[in-house]
Image (cartoon, rainbow, N blue to C red; front, side, top):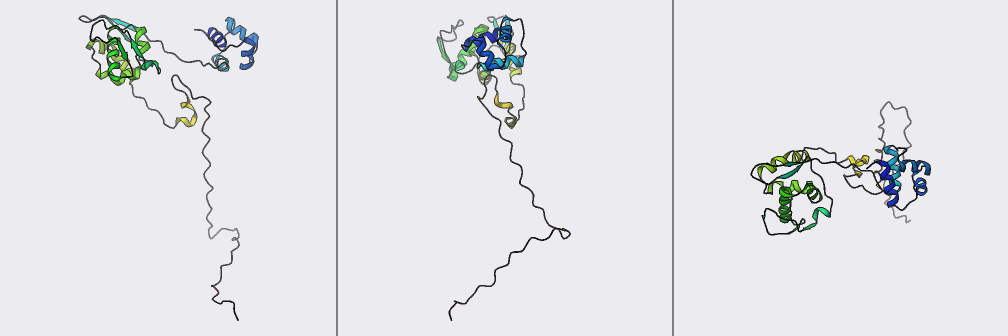
Length: 235
């Protein structure tokens, strides 16, 4: 999708006129109309500002390549170039009428919330599913969690191995990056109206120690209390 189409779709989804969206986003109606007609192209910064004004956000979406493999001795299958995420609740959906063409089991309903059923469904999807089925229900993180438990032929494992290595490559992250605001955003989520943490308070001033050569006068000394009066004040 190009930016012109996205801006128009976002505006219509928000129920706004061009004049209303232009006023919200700090641009003119004529400029916004030119963006939507495609006669003028906004920068990514401007497009993001316009989308934000109508409650939308520009996002990054990966395009996954799929290769069909036809090894001898087993049915043909598809393997991806990389893994992906399926957001809840879809990654925990109950799949009904998922055909088991190789008849591993008689089950025709799979509850992805149940680990054992997720294993069975993933095995069928990986061995027999089409790309549009796998990308809808197989979550990369959940797949990694059960990968060693799946009953898959060696050619299938080998074909999926590059995507698995890419998804599990070592990554180091700084737990304190939230101080700079960089961790307000995940792959498909953002903390609404998140404000940065206030800076830490300055350290208390250090007390200066006097030296024997300090020219400053000594502070006035408070008189020390005298010995206690043992008299009762009587004659």
